[in-house]
Length: 532
Image (tube, rainbow, N blue to C red):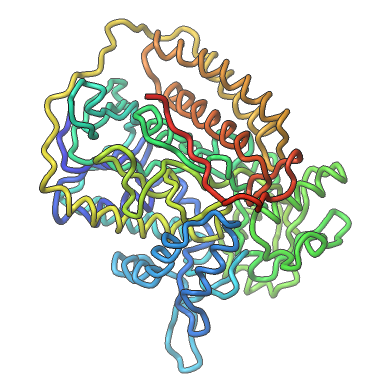
């Protein structure tokens, strides 16, 4: 089976589906999802979407908060572009059926409830209780399933992008992708005039992460292999508060809990954030994560505690119903007792380098959402700016795609996937062992606090793993696990090389060898260029 489309979108979260919906009235769109449509990071986003809606708030204030959180590396033009589209983005979601939490005003009317999170100086986070991503994803999926011009391909894992260079064409452009049908276990060819990567982040490179299993850096690795630059890969955001329990897998305690008065405590009940930042619990995530990491190492702790039990129980249950119910499964009543928490890899601030329309170095190839480095986040993402970025850049990319589609021809017939010289693997244990080794040394050596020695040790190991995995890939039929491992090892190496090149501490990158920011030279993003 193969398909020919105007636009192929790889990924099905907020970025991918909103792009599909913006395009579908004008062209034929295919959306490829490596599992079910809703299984991605968007589904698990708890906090909300930052947008200037309050009378006391302003676009300028949101811009300044974002620039401060980004530690000097945000692109001010991109920040302004994204922030200024906050209200129209929320309006678009409302038009597509997303139901956000509302409150009754003094005159009896309803208005959107705004909460506050770390780094924000105002209440500007629109949310659907504590499960905003689920509300957004469900509405977008429902709209996409109903649209006649959107073809949805679930359980399809993209193997590689197809460029004109790959098949010997003179013009440099994207032509489509090879995609593994994971149910049928065969590789199919998709041809497309345009391709958009909306495949999410890469935090499964770490042993402890808030991300679902699908976040293996696929789009970043595919774009790199195809010849696109990546930027700022050293900036990995560790969410400060992931539920610590042996049976609680990757469950986040939303930043909004701290925004509504939650306090971080040591086991003896004493607070500690005031010793690290005047903003206390509302400091940006990098500050809070490092503070928790410091206290855990100093005292030999397994976790610290987040306490919101001093807030009225009815308020807690109504504002955080998902967190309340999830914790209750583990016999933790958050209205009466503190929540054990630890930091976990949460968000990749870097990615495939793009312009203001999501265009990459390869003509016809776009990257939007967490897979991309747009310049919005700089050295640290401010809470709830990520869903806003996904939605704004989907709108930006749709404008560019529709403007340039008439002048873009359909790709020629493409070679089918060749499996004539490979066999079924009889050594699947190699994949699982390499996966475990990679995630463990990334956590140990490329985590919240780094040193040159740790990074160099990680680089030696990742180079050996990459060679071993490449050899395995060349001899055996592809499986979904193998594709993810192949992508993850490339992304891990990009993270390590980027971290080694930044000889200062800034934002999310903190190294004991260079513990201070280097403001003596102009600030620049870390850009890696693939070999021709």
